[in-house]
Structure formats: C-alpha cells, structure tokens
Image (cartoon, rainbow, N blue to C red; front, side, top):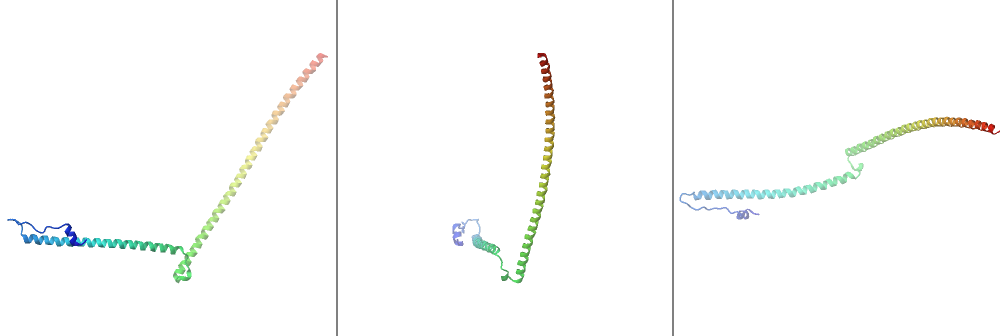
Length: 183
C-alpha cells in the first residue's frame, strides 16, 4: 500500500473550530501538518521495513535452499572415492595418510579380534577340561556308589542264604526226626 492510501484509511483532522478563547489556528495547523508529515515518515519507514523483511525472508529461503543443495553435493562427494591422481600433492598426501590410518585401524581391529578369539578358545578348552574332570569325578562317585550297593546286596544275599540254609537244616532235622518216628 502506498502512503496516500494508508492516510486515506485513517484521515487526520486538520481543522479546528474557532472559539472566542480558543487556540491559535495557524499554530494548530502547523502542528497538525508536522504530525501528518511525521506519520507519513513513520508509515514510509514501516513499509520500507516490511519490504526489507520480505526481501530478507526470501533471501533467507534462497540461502537455505542453496545450503541444502551444497550439503547434498558435499554428501555426494564424500561418498565417491577420491582419485589421488586428480588431487594436488598436499591433498594426495592427506588422502594417503588417511588410507594408512584406515589400514592401521583395520589391522588393530583384526589383532584384537584374534586375541578375543584366542582367549575364547582357551576358555572353551579350560571349560571342556573342567567338564571332563567333573564327568570323571561323577563316574568315580557312581562306581564307588555301585560298588557299595553291590557289596551291600551281596551281604544281604549272603545273610539270606545263611538264613535259608539254617531253615533248610532245621527242616531236614525235623524230617529226620519225623522219619525216625515213622520207622
């Protein structure tokens, strides 16, 4: 909007009625004219500030779009392998150092992995040996327990045999006594 259209929306009163003991008309007119001029300046400043803010906002948007495009380009460049032949000597040296550092990191990781695997294998062997010793101990305990049970069973059988023999001898003696009575 232009300054004139804005002043038309809010027209200022530029005349005053005359009174017997009123204000000086020229002084009031001058004051009102100054106020209108200041209001036009303030309105023009506001319009200029709005226009500048709009211009800055559009510039900010274009800079943000340019920044996003540059970031995409940088990301794309970072993903593609670098050909050392196309680089200046200093950058080629930096790439070579980075490559060497990458190899060292991989080598260190492989060594650590080998150490971890070795430790795991040693622990597995130790656990296998402990398990074998535990199995042997359990077998020995089982063998001793079975021997003790077998010995107990043999004692019980021997005792039963002795009881049965004693019973058989008693029955035979009774039968002899009975046979002698019958004869």
